[in-house]
Length: 406
Image (cartoon, rainbow, N blue to C red; front, side, top):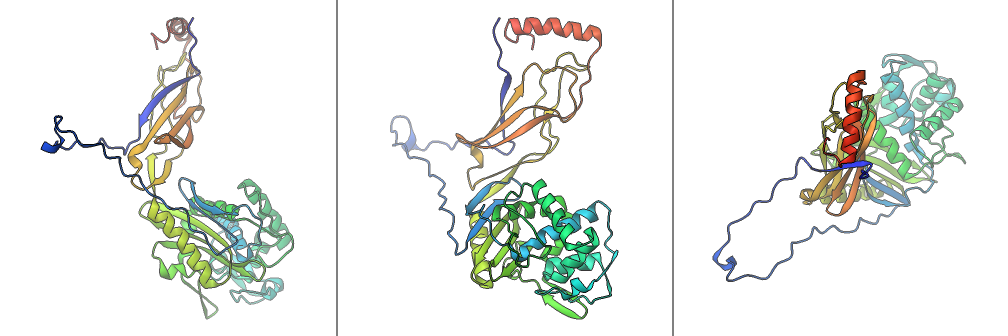
């Protein structure tokens, strides 16, 4: 008996790869007068910029590819970047219907007295969840953050515990929260990579709330304040997220921008001034947009193959991916992308929808640039007794002669 591989391997051309056009030969290129081979020009990409900052990272939001980083796992005080988690938890509760935008939140004396940047809520009043969320995101209101922490968890300490639970769930391994504001505390820290993960979840998980992060001004109680993210005025592609500053943390900025279908997220921590954090962030974003592009290879639910399934109510299984597949590659190299499907051989019913049945490997030339699980796009129930018996016989002879019946 010939042993079969545990995988069935199939090369799949990426949808956007086009065939090369062959130009007609000139007289100087005829076989009787050959010209020396000229090597193809290579795509040149410079090293990522070095920033005047303690830590930074740049990623593509859709593919997750890291394009530049430095000390991205270093634990640093996050200052008001903390409020990204505060806002994320508010958005999560809104999305689940546990709170409503027009819910009225009581303002405690503690919230009113909290120092630092303020929305200027007044003690003893009630303010809507929607207004407080705007105050947290746009003007970095410490008073708004404390008020929401009390409304959602009964106090800032239990809210910090909730923040830490979600940080663990999101894979933020170098983060620990002690408050909802980012005011200095000895055991309050995060990292550029962790803040990038959080920003990515804010953008992808709750897109209906993301427009708040691009608003340049917010007015409450007759006081108008400007968003401190200077790039919202300088770069039309930038549409969020959050600034931070304390004396210990320096000037920090988590920012995101989109050009065409490419969205980048940058985190810069520990610069020397408001202007420096804007300039250093701009360097990162400009580098990513100029030298890379992000391509959507396959849609969620797209049928990529229909392998044989044994002992089922049908003989074929629709196989694909459970999420859209994006790849970030150097510009002008997308024609080098190929995908290989490694589908488990001997697939046998019953098979559940969503069950992993193999892997897809994406290559850029000879380099592996991504892997994704292949899943069953539909359930295949077990066939009847007679169908199973027939398939057992066919499968025996298929294994015996190396797949003749497959």
